[in-house]
Image (cartoon, rainbow, N blue to C red; front, top):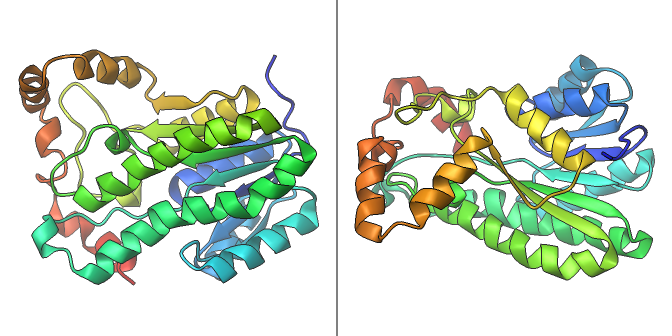
Length: 273
């Protein structure tokens, strides 16, 4: 039977918009006390107002340990943290040779270090209570590396590896670790990116529903849409040459290279600031 999420304190980073905001709304609808984190304090506050209920919003920079620690301390004013959703992430796209070192550092600091830092901050109290759940939002690109997003792919692969290790490390203490892997999602992060042949862009609400479902019934790896997991593991069993051919036929190998640059301009500007 799924866990009752009523009065559970759920902390979500990057929840001012997109997947994070949709997730906050669905957790709140399930009766949880939601703590929304966003880089912009005004955005976080407005998101909390939009979500309603007992939701609160506070600023957090997950790339800055002190900022993340302050955010967690503030979140604990709502009660012991039951669930942490490490959702904050950026996806600047370019050939690696065009990506400056500052952007490389920024991607890794937000997408990977933020997940590690968040886990370090909440795990000790979860271990002490022998209860808790850390849900890391990875990506299908964390299993299927794609050209033009090498550092992004690397960061999400690393999130998967880190989560695998933490699942083994924390399970004996009764703490769950899960990963959610969306394909292309209809959010600002994926502006100008088209889904591969035979697939459609999923909506943030679909990803949010998967996250809330995982919170209610913990499992390690959940893909959105669900059927894409079977497709990945089936094709991944093929020899490399056949796998590459299949990827080319559906356009997956070109998914982050054939983008609408103009449509991504505002997102890329914001991701770099």
